[in-house]
Amino acid sequence: MFVDSDVINEENSEDGSIHKIERRCKLDVDAPRLLKRIAGVDYVYFIQKNSLNHRERTLHIESHNETFSSRVIIHELCCYSVRKITLTSQMCC
Image (tube, rainbow, N blue to C red; front, side):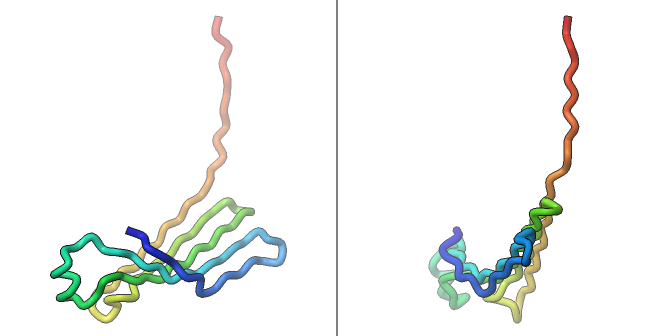
């Protein structure tokens, strides 16, 4: 479950069409307390970079884990875009 995030870096292009934000996010992992104690963590941290391009109507989200980065590498990349849909209507008699 998402707990919190801190903004590390944020920038906007001069014309305002591109907005980039980098966050450090904190998650509470759904695991038994004993397992969390063995792993030595109560929360898992990851870095998330978002890039919103209003002109191209795209959102790119990149994230990687920070907590177990020396043991497990998790790298996620998501790309969202809006596509133009042409609607046509037909007359019914």
